[in-house]
Length: 160
Ligand code: NI
Image (cartoon, rainbow, N blue to C red; front, side, top):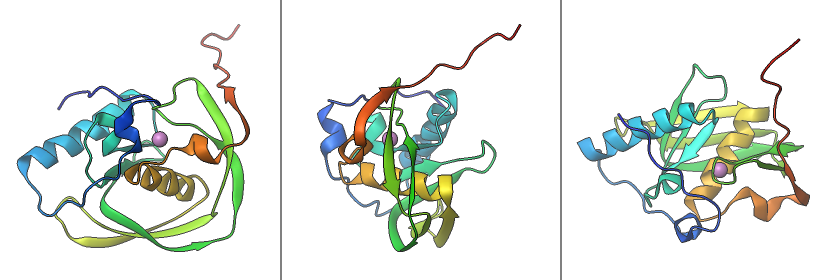
């Protein structure tokens, strides 16, 4: 496994539409492992393949730090409700903004064995699914921000 370089906002690769995965290969398995490692190393809750420069419809999501999902060729099949809250992206470091998303999302995807499954989520998981799937069509959350992008407030490293 290896940490991959995360592409940043302004990189053209983040504006492209990604291609469907038609078969699982050792190369794609390596990519998925690297995406998970890269996401964890960056303390992210999700990462899409174009963020590491690969135009394939693959995303990884883990909103708890111990429950990773790999979604291949995902699509949203149902949404409900609305949530408005802060969102950020590993491709836009140090920034965040307010985005409105559905509060509930149900998605259909293939797993790492190319078997179909559905993933349902509310709140942060629903937000992460929407955010990561947008990346696969070349969209980034800053397009949807209400108001201005803000600087992320750094957490205190030390307590006294
Ligand atoms: Ni993102």
